[in-house]
Image (cartoon, rainbow, N blue to C red; front, side, top):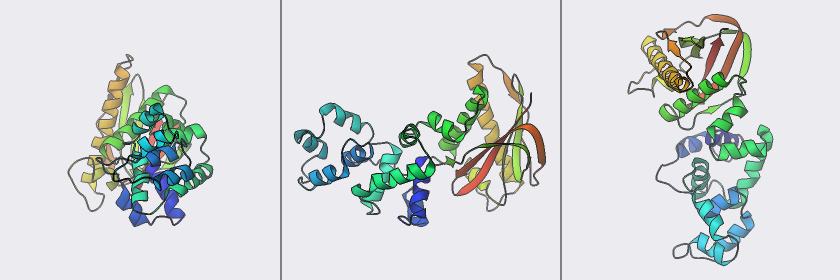
Length: 290
């Protein structure tokens, strides 16, 4: 989630272009972050110390971690901890920017600290984002009080990240009493919980899901594309139903529906979750009934 959020900030700062950011993401699976990069991001070493040590070793024949231990900058235990972060998506994203000479070690924490200030993130929140703690990240963007709604939102985002876009990210959710929807698909959840789940967006933004959930490709949002979005909602709700069943909570789902024309909905409990994925923006809307 943080890769796009931090990347967007760097585009705004003109450190990256939008094209460069798009080319960097998603990060390669078989790629690892360097020890010095992780140590600087985690503030185990300062950038100055890391750069000084890099200047003293031959990286073709010497390992930074071993040299840092010999110089008493790191302990064996701390190096082992650092190595566990080599496949962390954010560490790899930063490493790829360094490798492409978009950033250097001395700039990382300056930009990261400014990103934290501008976003109003606490230290705990920025740590959750960096270390990809999705459940904690949900508290930042979707601060729902209901445990069941929290569970649904978590299931939704995890499924989007797994099946649609691993770098999907959120804006702050909000409540509403009425809302005009655009093109959408929806499904009613009934049983021990009663709510209607919509995914809606104007223009062609629902291609974010329709073109990635299955092997189908659409040039524009049509009824077939919306049907695909409805099947995605059905998948999410099915996973949600399975999770609830472990707590002896039973729900069922009506057939998904869709329309090229959005309804005006009015309810005391509308929860709106803005989502960005695959270069598009859409919203999930939860219409909750007593």
